[in-house]
Image 1 (cartoon, rainbow over the protein chains, first blue to last red):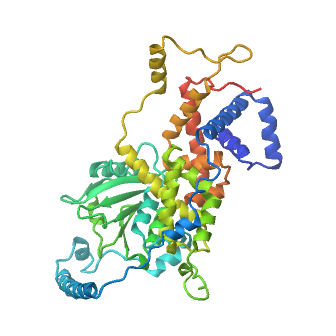
Image 2 (image 1 turned 30 degrees about the vertical axis):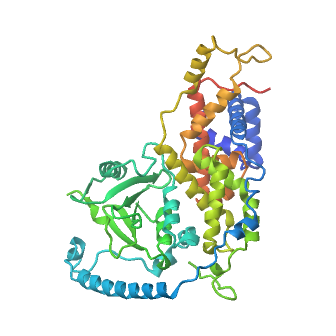
Length: 280
Length: 204
């Protein structure tokens, strides 16, 4: 194919998106242009190869019947009174423990950002106003909002271009910093002593944005997600939508240079954003 | 976000799909889910198991489905989740890929010579169909899971870009872009595999 415009037009024709004169003009050219005919031949051969290689069964889930699904309904177990008492006692202990931790927590020294902001956190937790501003994004993950596992799945499947790592477990912190530097032309460094392991990056060519997933050594339930975007793009909509009040997650944002960092976290304060600084 | 009008009787999320409704919706879109799973994995052999596992997971979490929204979009997330997990498990135990050409030569040597190549009506040498399919599959492996799934949904099921975007939960323009780049990638791979010469025979 001679150029990208030709390729786009060729595909638009294949997809039935050309109409009227444009379509007639293209079809006339197709009759005369050998290169275009070869292209069409190759395209058809590829489609046939795909059909041969991926023979879709007529009814892949025919054996999963409604009766079988219904049989998976689990009746609620009866709870013995002794267990009920034990649970009540455990709840009292937890509440008392939580109150103690909360007291100690509020006596902790202010973070660097809190100090910079005069004792007030420099991060804005998400509010209802965030949803109002991004209606499309809010709809994206709504059905699975409270489900961290599904949220994670929705995020990791975002397109990963060639050249960046395709598995979030492959890249270390240094690789992430290097990628950010090359992508944004801004030098980043990680806070010395940060004990987080950074996984990522995930990014897309469509949007000039990237995403970092982070795991903590203390368990899979801590699932902060850092979103890096140059503007309010699709990705940030996703994350905002996921962090609804029902989800129990918080969104913290922070601008570093021209880049907006967003952390989605189950914790009461951002734990990840401090890992990033614009180098002095 | 505009507030939804609550249905009579409370939150629409509270109206769960019955087993019959769920099974019917699954059946109606099962080919889509199968193709999506095969696309994410890049391999059809486990697609049926993936879809079944995803269906059971979705059934257990069906309280999260709003019947006013799209079932394929909702269920598609489970399919992709299970398929991506499986793909990651595979990549962890992956070994070095074997070059199909090298294998063919190895087998040919062991059997005492190369297989005769298929010849066309005018005596021209035709590219072997299975070798072509292998190269298409090798090209597919170079695509990401979502672009690969988008390509298969377009090429095999003939879904519109709107349907693909809904199934894969991406904007329509992105679905289009995935398919475009996947096609370009395949064309590049197939072009370089023959040193730029067309790999397929011309059709009359």
